[in-house]
Length: 395
Image 1 (cartoon, rainbow, N blue to C red):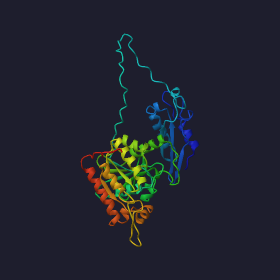
Image 2 (tube, rainbow, N blue to C red):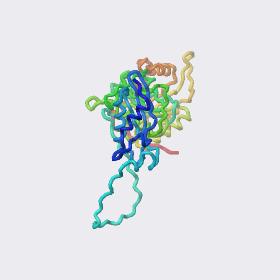
Image 3 (cartoon, rainbow, N blue to C red):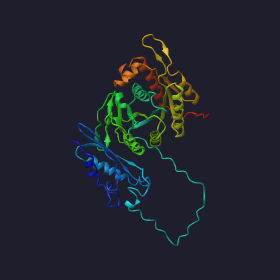
């Protein structure tokens, strides 16, 4: 049974603002619903536009709207995000809500004069851990096209081969690659608001790509992306206190934007693995990624040089297509560990496209050995004391 956008809006018209008779639909707070159909039900995603200063106060409204959608016949799961796009006075403004009463003042009380002082900077949010996860690491790059997702999935499998329980979160909302890399298009089951991760190759995996069709674009603004990422991080049954994941590997989107800052601010990242090719252009952006993680006090666990060299399968001649050794030199420059050099090889590409990573397809092969060594180095860093961040040198 499929559901229509009109049915979604009709159901949401019953959701009212606190202390108000106005509903979220009549106030034009609701974005156009994004509905993804599958054989066992519909996935509904939308955003609620709210004033930024009322976002926390309206979180119960968001939760109620999501619950209303999840209760609709034919809806398998729903995702509602808050986005602050309008200024106060448009849409859901303070005019639509009863303001809190002013504080009561004692007219006889003596008030000490306020002494001027330096402006106070807001304290950064304190990251909270994810239930059932011991360590969270980010696999990041300064730009796309350097093989970050392939490295992330094979690094995760390398950690599994160290005897660890590992999960993978695909944090690239706009371009999710993990479903293709693990060869699965299974829709995750939901128990209430908690999604059950997909099991693939000994990993627990979650991605927005499991919830929407592969060719469906995610035409979302930043706040909605961050809300979706937060839900994929915190509303997934990664593990329990009695049986936790040892490591959650987060495949970050390329760049140094909202997703990276959200991860750094909302969860205590144990560290970041930076992926780059040896090419100068890639290294320029990799330096930006390293600097960003340093600024938010996330230690660099190491640097991986991907597509480090190419060996011709016919003649055996080696070619340094993108140069060679640049990422290793960069790791030495900033004082971060160099985790390893991964060659540009057709087996890695073809197995990734087939959904069977080379670490699984050829576990005793030379490429699996490289990823296993990278996994061993990361596992050692996580098992020891909390690593300190590298010394960043600005030139």
